[in-house]
Image (cartoon, rainbow, N blue to C red; front, side, top):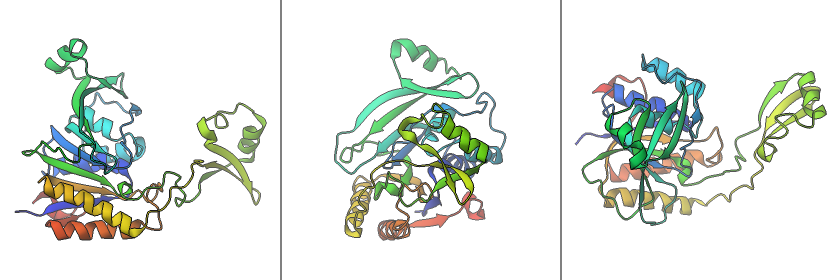
Amino acid sequence: MSKIPVYIMEEHHEAFYYWNYFIECGLIPPKHNYLLHIDHHDDMEAGGYDWDFRIPWESLEQIRTFTYEKLGIADFITPALYQGIFDTVHIMKNLLPKPCTEMEFFVQRVGKGHLRQGKYIPFVHSEYKREKNPDYSFYTLRENGLNDWTERERSVVLDLDLDYFCWDDSLSTAGVKQMEITREAYEEYWENLYHPFRILPKRLMQAKEKDGRYYLEYREFVKPDAKPDKERIKNRINHLLDWLETEKIKIAVVDICRSRYSGYLNNEIFPWVEEEFLKKLGERTDYVRREIGRNEDNK
């Protein structure tokens, strides 16, 4: 049996590039894959991407440009669904043995670069599905289901964010997110009571002055989550791996997101969480850690 390839990325939007890379080097087929998305967040946002989705991809390098210039860490799955890489997305955000729910959805391209999602309604959308309307892509969304895995014959792309084991939605260890601005921009911010950055939800942006220099700072006012102790994280890791092993889930490839720069995984504990997961994974299965661009990827 060949070893399961494991790839590690820094932030989760990079997964779109990685999935297309997996296709190019033959790890997964171009269409109709099963995405097992294990994450503290579902990352299923959609919207405008400032890209013309009517034009086919010309190269992997173009996909890389799209990934790093147009995608965020919560909206990268939707373009993959529109592209048809996955026909099933299975989201697991916690370790509770909740019954699996299943619904049919669509992704629709509106104009050049806007993607929207909606629930599949047969009498409205069946014609689009039957005629393979290029503006639409259809998929199955599954959520939860620790104890009722039914896809015995399908291989999955295991997409794991390490914040599944230990999360910090306050981003308390991510560092200050700021950019320098002019004094004029700073003064405009404070003089205009209705400045667009002042009336954002939760007052996310704020202009500040420090040592004669001016900054626009982003901050989420969320109470820091308690940092789980290492024994609790170990239990979560073992629980997940127990489930994968017990249900005999066939894994084609694993991609792991660190989420350390965004701060959703506490920076102080991230190296240990990664090391512990890979150690426990290695105790249960034969895997090989790979990097994009290495020659062995197409063997």
